[in-house]
Each structure stands twice: as C-alpha cells, then as structure tokens.
Image 1 (cartoon, rainbow, N blue to C red):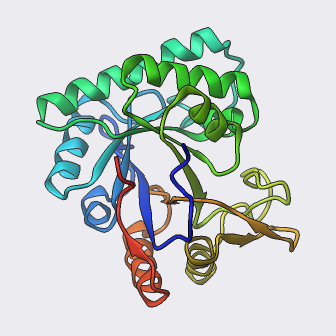
Image 2 (image 1 turned 60 degrees about the horizontal axis):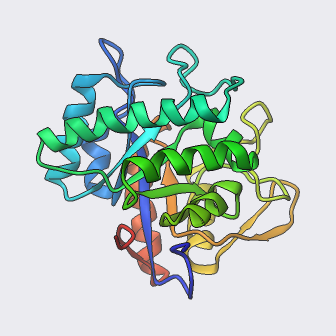
Image 3 (image 1 turned 120 degrees about the horizontal axis):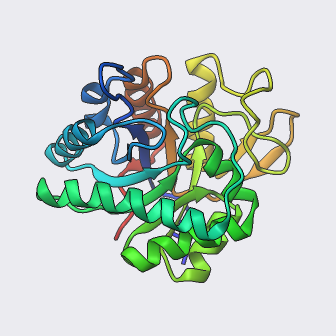
Length: 260
C-alpha cells in the first residue's frame, strides 16, 4: 500500500549518499546527513566502494537516519546515468547482489536496511517499464519483504511495489524539472535541473504541502509523494537541505522518515 494517503502533514527527506570511491570524492555526506531522514547509499555499481559504504552506514546510524540501498546498473564510469539493455532476470540478480552487499555491512555496523531506491538510468527505465519494475520489486521481496521501494510517484515502480506487497514510497524531486506526463525531464534537456535554490525550494514546498508541481511546459501536475529527494552531488546540498527544512516548517510540514 502506497505510503502517501491523506493530506501530507510530514514528509521524508532523502538524499543519495556514499557516492565517493577510492581516491575520488563526491558530495559532503557529513554535512548533509544530520539534515535528512533517509539516506540512499551507493552499493558500488555506479559509485561507492566497501569502505565508503561502511562509513556512510555508520554516519547514518549515528544520526538516526534510515538507510537504503541505492541500486544501479553496472556503470561506474557513467555514474549510472547511461541506459543499458538488461533482461528482468538479470536485473533481479543485480539488485539482489547490491542489497546483499550493503545489508551485510549494515549488519556489521549494528544497523539494518529500511528501503531500496534505484539510481539514475535504472530509476527512469523502471519508472516506465513495468517488467523492469516488477523485477526490482521481486528482487526486494525475495531478500526482505519488509524493505520499502522508493520510486517515482505515480510510476510503474509504485504499482509494482504495491502488487508485490511491498511498502511503496512515492518520490518527488526538489531540484528536477517535470514533463507534462509526470516524468522527469531528461538531463539532456536544458533546464532539467533547477539552477537556483529559490526555484528548488518553491517546488519542494509545493510538492510537500500542496501535492503539486509545475511542469516544464507550464501545466500544474498532481504528485502524490511521501518523500522528497535532494541530490548529494548537487551544489551545496547541505545548504539546500537546511533551507528546505526551514521552508517546510514555515509551511506547517514536518520532516520524518516514513513509518515502517
């Protein structure tokens, strides 16, 4: 059952984290973690490595932040943002491999996973392709049916999670533009990512309080979301998260992770 029914009084803030690997650094997880309620931890396929995963899990646990597996296509060089042809059976294996790796590290750190969220190209592919969405939901259910699936609100991922008996957490994006059909504007299109903090904050409040967003082409869309995403690889994600929390408080919206 989707966790977004009734008027939204509280909303989850999630962020993609643990995206450094080796000597390469991405984001400022230490500054962002205290400001969000859910962390999507890269599992090594698009970013992250075993040591980064451990540090990120420990950081999330220290701040009481829900931990999720941020699963991806195997595309480290492309940061998981390039589409690949993948059969549902193969995708099931890839998703379970990544969940298993992060779950083991979390267990060693005295924590457990709360959710799974696909990343990048896989996220967009599964949002529109029900067979891929079903493969992800099946992979999660077989590993741990208590894990929630974070997916684009109104998409095939939410429907697949519902059908599989998983908790479906509809997601919306603070800093991404939307098309008139409710999909995210492709990053190849100018304006796909909001360039000003003011625009992102306006959109975040509208999504949380009013359940709506203005599409790139001007239409007002109804969006049923229980979580808002802040990108950890964006410009000053900690500053954006802090400002968004302030704006949400002014609008009467609390911030907390979805109930489990």
